[in-house]
Amino acid sequence: MSLDLRWVEARLDTAFVGRRIVYRQSIPTTQDLARAEAEGGTPEGTAVLAEEQTVGRGRLGRSWVSPAGLNLYLTLVMRPPLERLRYLSMIAPLAAAQAAEEAAGVSPRLKWPNDVLVGGRKLAGVLIETELSGSSVRYALVGIGLNVNLEVERVPGIADIATSLKREAGRPVSREEVLAALLNRFEALYDEGGAVYAAWRSRLETLGRQVRVTFGDQVEEGLAEDVDAEGSLVLRRADGSRVTIAAGDVTLRQ
Image (cartoon, rainbow, N blue to C red):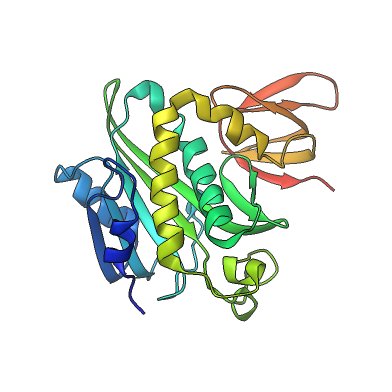
C-alpha cells in the first residue's frame, strides 16, 4: 500500500521540512537518493521517502530491514550552519520519539547516541551523513527508519531486539499520521537549536547504567554518568577517571 502524501501534506505545520517530497516505491537506500538530490541543489527540508529499501543501512555499516508498505524510511536534506550541525543527532531521534508518542500513544526512550527504544527494543534508528566544504556545511543527510506496522517476530535476526508501533500499541498504526507528526516535530525542534538538549537528555535511558562503548578500535567501560551540551557521552571509569566520547556503540555491561 502506498503512502497518501496529500493527506500528509494537508497536516503539515512546517515552513520547509517536508514541503518537497521525493517518493519512490523501491530504491537501494534513501540516503543515496537524498545525496543526489542534495548535490543537485534541492531545497533544505526535502524529504526522500521510499516504500522499500533493498539495501537499507544503519549506523556502523549495519543493515536496516526495510520491507515494503509497513514502515517509514526517509532521509531529510538539511543545510544547517556549522554550529547547529551537532544538534541533528539529538533532534532526529527526539522527533521520532515524539511522533511515535503522538500517533500511537507509546512512550519511547532513547539510547545514546540516537536509537529510539520502547521496552528496551529498537523502534527507530538514525543515520546522519554530512558533506563539508572547509568550515561550512554543504548539506547533512538525516536518515530515519521507523518501524510502524512491521511484525518483528516474523523477521529472523531482529525478533528479539526490535519492536514496532503496531506491536507496542496492539493495533495497526497510520503511517501517514506518524510521518506528518515526525516532519512537524523535526522542524519545531530544529528551530529550537541548542534548547533541544534538555529534552533529548531527559529521555536517555543510557544514563546511570554500566556500559561498554566501542568507537573505532577502542573500547571503554564504566558508568554512563552524563552527556555534555555537544551530545558526547561522559563515562566514569572504574578507577574514577572520566572520558568523553563523541560517538560510539553502546551495550549494557553485564
